[in-house]
Amino acid sequence: MQANIRNQLRIPCISKQKDIPLPHNPKQKTRMKIAIIGAGNMGGAIARGLALGQTIDTKDIYVSNPSQPKLDKLKEEFPDINVTNDNQEAVTGAEYIYLAVKPWLVKPVLHALKLRKSQVLVSVAAAVSFEELAHYVPDKDMAMFRIVPNTAIRIRQSMTLIAERNTSGEQHRTLTDMLDEMGKTIYIEEKNIAAATALCSCGIAYVMKYVQACVQAGIELGIRPSDGKDLVAQTLKGAALMLEAPDANPAKEIEAVCTPGGYTIRGINQLDHDGFPSAIINAMKACMY
Ligand SMILES: NC(=O)c1ccc[n+]([C@@H]2O[C@H](COP(=O)([O-])OP(=O)(O)OC[C@H]3O[C@@H](n4cnc5c(N)ncnc54)[C@H](OP(=O)(O)O)[C@@H]3O)[C@@H](O)[C@H]2O)c1
Image (cartoon, rainbow, N blue to C red; front, side):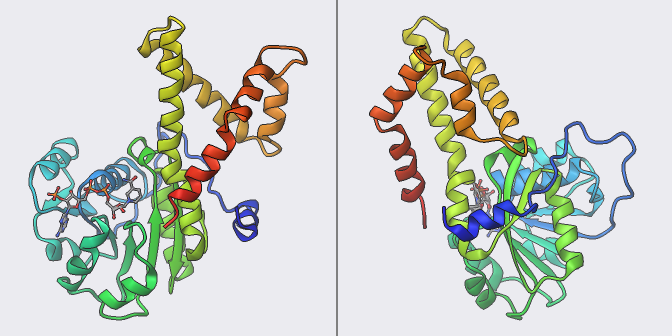
């Protein structure tokens, strides 16, 4: 990891975890129109996260998508949400516009829209830089965020990376409030997005690969796949919570399990011998764009 990311991660910029379920005495919801373009994995999860959250009134959420089934599903789950097949209808009068389409659709979708400088663009598209986005909007000085959630945003447990450009303090706070309700957020410089994405967005797939291998081992050792999955899931949850302690350190936690002359150290040495750490490091580097 580059020193500048490490330094950024050291400063207390990771937001506080919001527990689920949400608080019993909800705060006053802000009234402002929010547009979400694209109702797929990311757009759909953001719409659901906002609708379940305490920051935005569901009546103020407008989601646009070309095909109907995803919109119908959203409407069924949240009858107050507004859905449309017309991106411009969603965007007109919106203060924040989440753009959650595939990267190659960013240019045509933005070019077709009439945006105003006062609106805030929140791009979810991976690898589309601020510089590129600035070419597709009417004013290159428009306030913009780039966000990189991971798929755990679906259960409001995302590690969401945020970079910002031309934004005000108030816009920064508002976006943080919205996204903090879907997990944790961290602000990073745009140049560090790819590296941080490797750890938490691609990283979630690597964790699943680890789980898959554990389940496979369990089967060979006589454990049913569904039981194996549960055993590993709870183990990961425990490990993750231990790592959240301020002085947590993975090396210390490994040492705590490895009794001298015991069994775990044999497994750890086997992992090192088989190249587990370098496989992970290479995978993190391989997914850099
Ligand atoms: N998945 C991840 O882990 C992840 C993480 C971070 C960032 N991202 C980024 O998030 C973005 C969305 O990814 P995703 O996984 O949510 O993709 P997705 O599930 O395919 O969703 C994209 C949605 O955009 C809709 N769409 C297509 N053309 C459109 C148009 N002209 N106007 C409005 N909506 C349109 C699609 O509708 P139809 O299905 O009807 O075509 C689809 O519902 C991508 O840019 C990706 O790089 C993804």
